[in-house]
Length: 350
Image 1 (tube, rainbow, N blue to C red):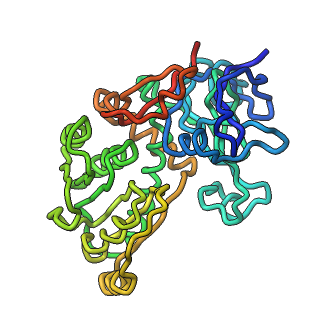
Image 2 (image 1 turned 45 degrees about the vertical axis):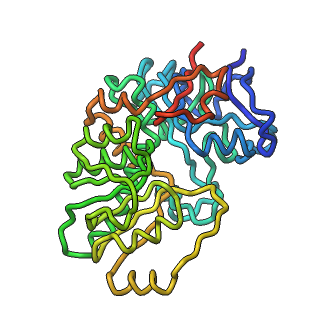
């Protein structure tokens, strides 16, 4: 028996292909899942086009896919799951030592770097028509979400970012009312959704002036901005930065309110160098009590918060985020950005 999966030899992007792989071993987990969809993001493009990623020890190929959605096919009675449950898989696994954060379930704060990640680092991912998972790393979704459940992993990223930003913001007694999200890709739009759910006055900054993004922001009740960040006209208490564009990150120190928090979620692949003004930025951050904090991945608590946020969201708005569906066998088409793309997903079922 075998499953159909999308895999690559890390370091050899020309080897990316859909092919037969052995059935997922029981060591992957006791819950058997029929794969439905995976979302494609920049990390997947890096793996498939640039050779990023690490295969499991002793293996040559890596099955990709970390933005998962599937339906339980079989599960032990004591697992907490039943056949038919809609689920997504958590990406990161704690290191084998483990370090203190990993031992406490906060593997997103792993200190020794020996964590593994499904579809990225030393563990096969979810881009297969069937996969297994440990019950403690599976997240049940509201069944009414249907295919929209594929948005869970990116939503978990911003659920953690908001959690971190608000924890840091709590150092000041000043109330927080205004939020700025930079970038209107899937992460940015989901960050805006969670900001609106938190009753912030949300502003979104992006360079795109046409396509679905401005309307998606407006339909949240948020405000869309383009042009020069310096002329945005608001002083946000909290910034969720989703572009990874270095010059923008430092420009934000001129925009954010006193005592403000800038939470970074994006990483840029650009190798361009830009002039910086480190002394001025340092002065601004000290005198204005600014906080700049990075946020990566997510713990189970953030996945559960993301599942609750999606369950509470307007389904028709979420559906507009998924702009293209591509059959697994034509995965190359999903890697080519098209006008109007927000989230592109691969269909795993035959």
